[in-house]
Length: 267
Image 1: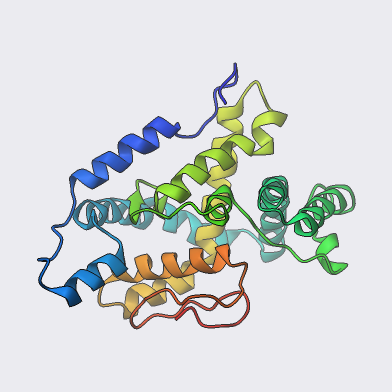
Image 2: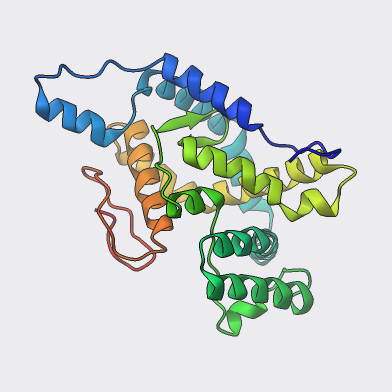
């Protein structure tokens, strides 16, 4: 996986060490006799909650002092049409990773659609700035290796919060590493993969944060426990992603409902 090109992502061993560090700060499980509390504890699936909350607080500080102000400035000073073009380029760069994961999941028609979108938009959409394929009826979808592992039957593992990256779990953290390896920019610019990957990641982070300024403000304003709200919404969204928006088992999330791609409520 490494060869002579140093990739700009955490190694699997680093992810494993982080997982062990998280588990070192585990919350104590309820007493065996309290079946209701035991069921709720298993349902929440957050045994490292004390450590996760500390990491959430750290991430929130980074967001409040850096990422959110950047996103707000981006929204205020960059014209909407130009922001749309940038988002389209980022979406287009993700199509090859989606196509590979589609193939690994046995979704060959969806893989062909992702490849078709990439070719059409790269050629006729000015390197992806325009979504020509979408206008022609080729709908965009995303797949990642975390979803692929889920399709293969790998369990999500305990919920965890990663520094800077935010909500995750061992399955999705592993998927993140693999997807960074498949990122086409790392291969288009083999002499400077770190610069290419960090630059793309920074633009993606600002673009995504700008997209969710208003929803996150509302969640933070109305939530009694912002951490628990984000945890519930993350798990609902990932369950919906894995099912490709199809109706499936509801993800427990008291008081919250994530609207799935199919229009069904997440709980």
